[in-house]
Structures are given as structure tokens and as C-alpha cells.
Length: 300
Image 1 (cartoon, rainbow, N blue to C red):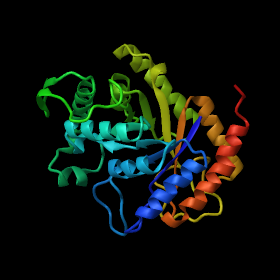
Image 2: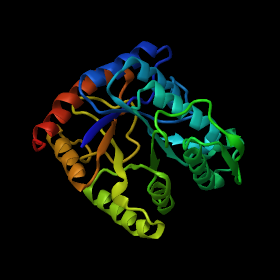
Image 3: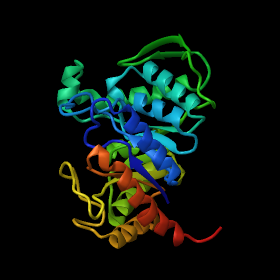
Image 4: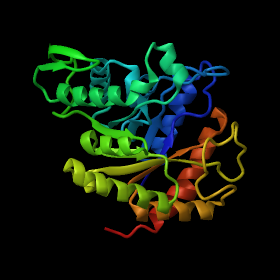
């Protein structure tokens, strides 16, 4: 199982460019597998919540090995042609290290600020995914949809390979799981126990029969919330913590191992810490979690 971290504390301080890139480089040097960035348009009081595609483009230029993903990009906020162009550019600049994690978005205030109807978010996401797949196929695209019209459109930037970067579809509703099977290379959720993983896999198996897709083709990944032992959170955890409240390092290692056995290929840790604590927290992740996890993995 791979281990990633969210490159996003509750807030980056204003003027944090150097700190952001030092943190990304530290994660790569320590052997972590992924850096992930989330998507917010509002609620930036007290610091900077950085646009994920902008952030990951800067990180792509500063790193050489670690993989990058949005976790997740709210697809209805942007025209799919714009997303196709930006994601293909990041795919090229990163040397194929980028995965596009997408979802419907959820915040009514952000939809209202964009002049969008939040009730249409599912339909917009489905249509945008169909457009992305068509645009990355290489041929000029004619598309007449509910929200998008294209005539012989070809993005200015082609992805490195036909089909474009991997798409991870986020969400745990029935509609989201069907969407992952229809359009995705992976599913990206918020599960933190083996029981929750098994429940999602069972639902994917059932829906796979309906859409004629083998769920085994999907990479399964999740974001888990963690406060490292000895650290103080800057904000409350937004969900159930991995391993339970106050979990020890040993309990966290055990919880991660169980998630891997249940079928997750990647766990991304979101740590609600002050940005200045992230490098120390990454050292703990690499030595105490990643080191122990890899020590018990069977040799190939």
C-alpha cells in the first residue's frame, strides 16, 4: 500500500511559497508516494488555501519522483475544456506523475458565488467527465450536452498519452460509485476502517454488473485524518480519525495495515497542523509509519 500526505495544512501563511516547496521536497526525500491538494474557493480568512492545480504545478517543477493528485477538484466549478487543458499541462510538466481526482463539490456557498445551481452538480460532473475523456482521445470533439457545446474542439495541450492522466472519482454515494465505474481509473473516498472499505467494495461489485465494468480495474484510495502523537491540532478533525481518537503510533500502523489488507492501494493522511509543523510531522510519518509498514511487507 502506498502512503501520501495532503500538502495542505488548515492554512498556509501568506507568502508561504518557500515553505510549500520545502515541504513538498521533504516528502519526496523521505520516500512518501503521493502529495495531494484539495480544492476550495472561499473560506480563506487567516491564510492561503492554494488552488490545487496551481500548487501542484509548482510542486511538479520542484520534485522529480513523488506522484501528485487533486483530492479532489470540484469539477462543476470549471468548464471541462479548461480542465482538460490544465490537467494535460500538469501531466506533461510532471512527466506523467499527476492523477486528476474529481468530485461534484458540496458547498452551496461556493456554487452560489459562481452562479451555479448546486442541485445540478451531479449532472454537470457526469457531463464534464464524458467531455474530458473525449478531449483526451486525440480526435477533434463535437459535443452537444446540457451544459457543454463543442465543435471540432482539440485542447491546445495534448496529454503525454492518449486517454490522458488517470482520473480518480471521489465520493461515497451510489451515484459517485457508479460514476467511478463509468469514467474512472480509481475511486477516492474518505473511509478509515476495513469494514467501510469492504462495504464500498461490495457496492462497487453490485454496480459493476449494472454498468458492465470490472470493479477490480479500479484503484481504491482514501483520505484519512491523523493527529501525530505529540502534536497539537490547529483545528478540530473534520471526521473520524484513523485508529480512533488519541491513537498511538502502533495503533496507526496497525490501522494502515488493515486498510491495505482490505483493498486500499493508497492512503493519504490529512494532518490538521500548523504549516510550520508539517516538516516535523512528515519525519514522523516516514520513520514511524512508512518505515514500519514497509518493514512488514513481503519481499518480492
